[in-house]
Length: 126
Image (cartoon, rainbow, N blue to C red; front, side, top):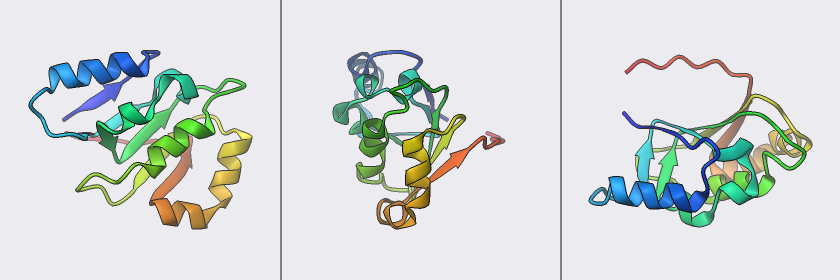
């Protein structure tokens, strides 16, 4: 099983590490869970990074005046779904105005196959 905790790392650092550690693995690399970097700020996620990883479950923790960024959310949900993933679940422990607006937009959620969750408790067994 693969769980990716990005902490506050820059997208280039994570991108380089994934490509180094999983050099011979096909991309995008599928993770069971991804904890999005730095509260989901726009500067800590890139299209390049999202192009080499995917998951059914993305977790955003914390909130600042600029994070989670709608740009980060868009990068994740507009990326092509990796084989074996039917939809993505984005989990937020704190909602923002943008998240609340997206939550109401069920057409967009259907079009891009994602769901927004808050304060969700998951139990995983491996």
